[in-house]
Length: 69
Image (cartoon, rainbow, N blue to C red):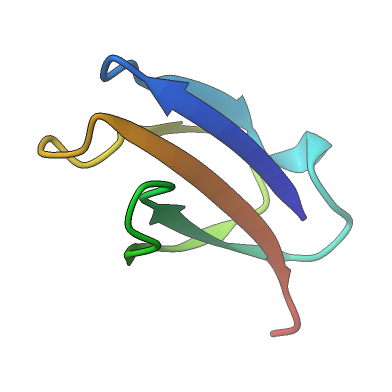
């Protein structure tokens, strides 16, 4: 599991193959102020993937989690 905290609306590009040996990664955002979460999607553990936090949030925590499937 990997977590990154973002403020001021940046986007980030992540090399997915450096995260885990699992074949797929689940991604979601958490608003640290409210605890609200938003699913981003399920991604193959290959290549580079870009992530941008939700527009209305001042801060956001990106969670990338190895998937069992």
